[in-house]
Length: 598
Image (cartoon, rainbow, N blue to C red; front, side, top):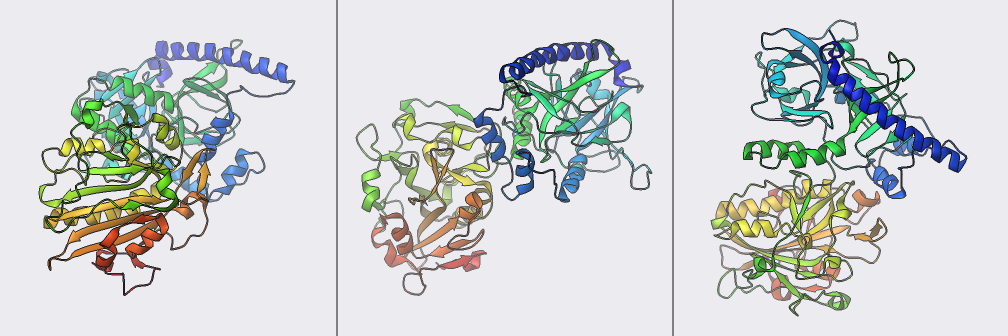
């Protein structure tokens, strides 16, 4: 029995609405074609949208770019492997009633380690979900024999969200089946909220359980013909039971949730197109529907976005970024970085900004040059709209474990909004909002919560490629922070980008620094200061070029090297540098903790 038979009214309602949208978009396409004397498609692909689409393509994947511009239909053989991997997360939904009778079938797919996405007309309410189950591996092998099916109960008590207008249901699935199989074996398809994942004229693929049958796929002979505010139309072959299927772009990103066929007005038994709900629209509605939800439910949505590539902050993103507002009173008690933090006789002032950079320091509204936050401070560049240097005090004896439960970022009202790079820099690309002052570092003492919140200012973030921010650089930051906490140490850490005149200009106005530096200062057991400096580069990540040090490497370098690169003056810290007299300026590779020279 198919879902068409079981839930006929809901299906017909969705098809009727899809037909209305299809007729409207067809009229627009016809008008455009007539006006331009061409066969141009629904004109939604603005230059900015095309730029966003290109920004989502792996820079090493030249074949995808050639397909996008229509010069090639070649695919790497790994395309098929990637499709098989994506298919693992797609399941058949067996819709049952309260006494176990099978009412029909649909398709769904995992979008996080716990959550499944399908249509509202497949799982209309929590009761329908409670009695139903999902089945993975419902497919045939190379010998056309059935694979062992892995069944899981749906858990709407843990999380259930649905929306009739956008025809989606997001629901939790039990983590372990009755047979002891873990849900994690089937992975999940990243739920990417950003728009711009596909353009009109590209081709889509759809992995589905047609009429409840074993898993099948329609690959690529399916053109996207219209891109509406909340829906897409495409010429894909689907059958009843395919409701809830993921619709993929050429690079196997989920761009839509399949939900309805567009019936032919002349013959209702036939269909002229199919309609899917845009993932970006579903993401917006999830944000609205999460208002007033419990802390446990919010954590599951944090988990949903934790696997999102490209547009995250330090570590991994927890939800779509929001821009919040803090009053000026918030900053009144912010004393900032304390130069005397390490104790009497160990003053470590902010480095002086010299050379040409001294003329580029941005003035703060109160007439100074330093922006003070809780336990850290920074100095901004007027031309680069980013911090030149940040300085934080870390007290390892009083660190608080503060969980990151939201992703709200702030413009600092003490300087002009136009003097800070905002969210538009980080949309639809592989750039993270990289914290310069790591969010955990100032999180100590009674003001730990405020300090953690302060790190989410745009003044404290810098565009860092995700492979730099979430991997090697993060490992160094973790090493410093964890050891401070483990041994109860006090540490001062300075961080910043290396600004060069030939840094890449991105999207016409944003200069992306290719290198980042860090200087850590502490008092050793013998009572002497230790100042160690590090540098990491992302140049090969942002423009695929060779660079001075090495791929994905962190280097310990003399403090004097950082001074030469940045124009900063760290005063007598260079005399407390263990590399000052025994190493060349080329630095030493840091691959493990034992490589650091204190």
